[in-house]
Length: 94
Image 1 (cartoon, rainbow, N blue to C red):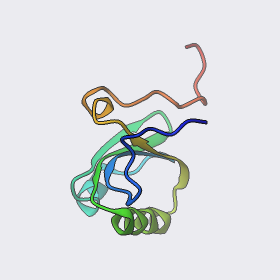
Image 2 (cartoon, rainbow, N blue to C red; image 1 turned 45 degrees about the vertical axis):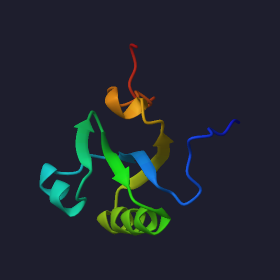
Image 3 (cartoon, one colour; image 1 turned 135 degrees about the vertical axis):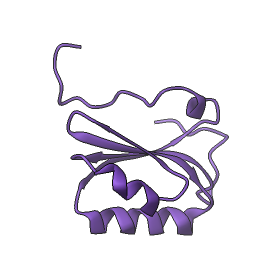
Image 4 (cartoon, rainbow, N blue to C red; image 1 turned 90 degrees about the vertical axis):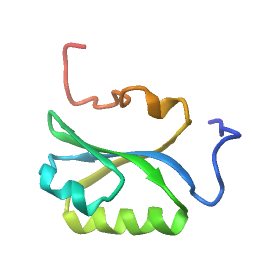
């Protein structure tokens, strides 16, 4: 496993947070600054996090929603300009 030199030890950065299950778009306002995308059985939150305390707060909010946390990925600056990563392995026919 490798680490990137652009990762910030204080948690500052751009994150992709994948949840199992679909979160209604009305929840988007609760996660200010994050983009909420839903797909076939998943929800993806993408956006900036100012520090590790904010990341923990965001994860606590997500816990309270009741969906299963699948992954939390800090992405490179260049990655945030691309479309979200396809990591949903529950679908077939790829």
